[in-house]
Image 1 (cartoon, rainbow, N blue to C red):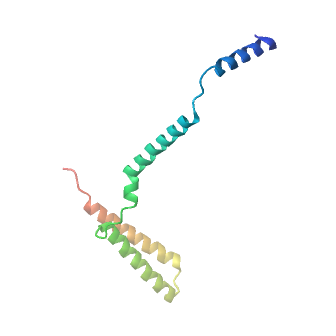
Image 2 (cartoon, helix red, strand yellow):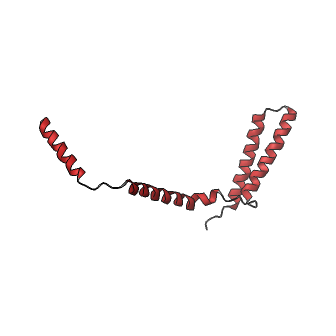
Image 3 (cartoon, helix red, strand yellow):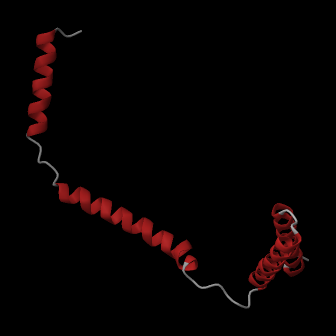
Length: 114
């Protein structure tokens, strides 16, 4: 174990050795961070971003089924308002029907492996 004088000498020697090294400019750090961020953003854009901003295809079967489900749900909600049927039951029934249609369509359009 070093005594307090030995510790102090060691700390001062370390400090002196570090001071003699050239400091790395902060610009290098900022450039490295900017380059890393650019790589991450470019990768995200190439994998996900371009698909996020692409408009939905109007002829897509899944979009058509969901649109029909929403329209039917709106119709059912209007009928429920007039008939005083609890809305939660109508919502659940409409959502279940839309999900079932989507699952049936997906199952029928999924190619089977020979």
